[in-house]
Image 1 (cartoon, rainbow, N blue to C red):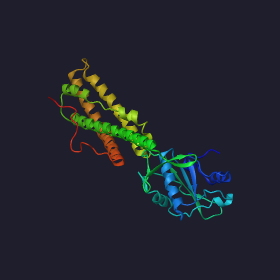
Image 2: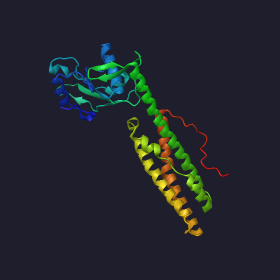
Image 3: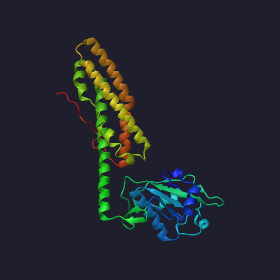
Image 4: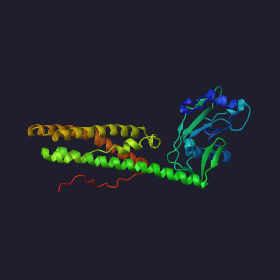
Length: 315
């Protein structure tokens, strides 16, 4: 029987099968008798395992199953069904950075008992490496359990984290630049300008989607915990690319010598209305939401809170 890869794939029959086969631990799951134990070593083991899973490929901690070999019927003991998620969160509070986790809700019922099996899933963390603060140690996971990370492993993980964070910064800068372009474009298309002015100015406006298109696949796991931002960025890329096509099409019309001045003015008016509707309804609000979300989640501060980029200045 294949080891479940998703939280909702676990059930009592699978756990019972592993118990009967004598499973103790693997590189992807581990049994624990309880979240709160009178044995300090057991409590430390929970923190180490959580830290190790987050620093490696993720895994499941299954509470309510003894991790020492006993008779089959005695190993599945269960835990009392209380506020188990809070208890687990409190237990791992000594990990830095904080580790996110999912959990079985409701817990798995044990036939004939008033206790339950509680499962937590710790995914591979994009904030790794995580440290067990009280001992100042980093752990990673193997098929033989938790191992302490070497200096070289810790160093490499920090370098990898800096690279992922730099990619978030690049994304933020591109979104901020696009917001400035959108606000300038909104101002220009709402003003009284001549067709010649617009023909000269519109080539300056081009939204950039290079980072959104190239970096999202690389940092998907970093952003995937927030489905809202993923959907927002995908929609933004579509909207910005569509707007670029519209601006390009408009410029072709404006520089077409066969278009009369009257038609040029009409084209300008129609274009300004269309551009303003798109900017005000979709692009500007979406850019602001995306920037605010990234600022909050990754503690990035807008370097220009009180001013805008100047992308066009008439001499």
